[in-house]
Length: 113
Length: 111
Image 1 (tube, rainbow over the protein chains, first blue to last red):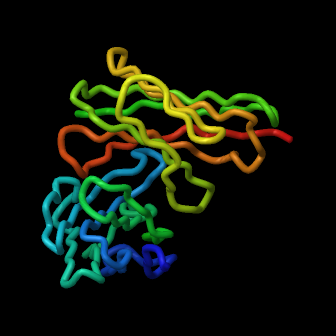
Image 2 (cartoon, each protein chain N blue to C red):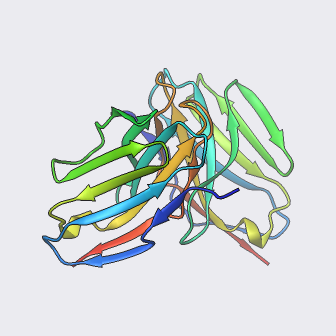
């Protein structure tokens, strides 16, 4: 079975540009998580969706970040405008239900120049 | 602020030895505890979870939990070079979805 799919795998952009990260969760999973990983802060939860509905967005750093889940098989994380401090690895994870094991995608390495 | 603390390492052990990885957490209400392994440039993968005080064994891995001391550890017996990775401790509190991760301990197993 395919795992969590993320695209792009690498993104290099210039400050001020819009960045869109994409995620396809494992089929049948109803919980989706976006994480950000940096050396300084480690792995942090940005937002959690359950059945396509955002349940907890308290980790979203600021209004420049937004996330959507229009259907059970697709989610986006958008940064507009991007800043150099947004450079990180962004992971999407999904689980069968909210309390089950979270399976991580391969991540998107974002570099904002 | 709920915190999960790990020694960043690197922890270096010879092949065949026991590697001991430690984690402390601040939230006394924490219910579930997880160990993830992350190879360089890869995503985290779950290797163990533990809910109750005591030890839980799975092959070469043993997770140990002491809720009174707010301490969880992972022992890796007969360490192999393929175990070289960063090990992330994660804690789940009252909510049934939110994991708080430590920054990880880098383990190097030398042949």
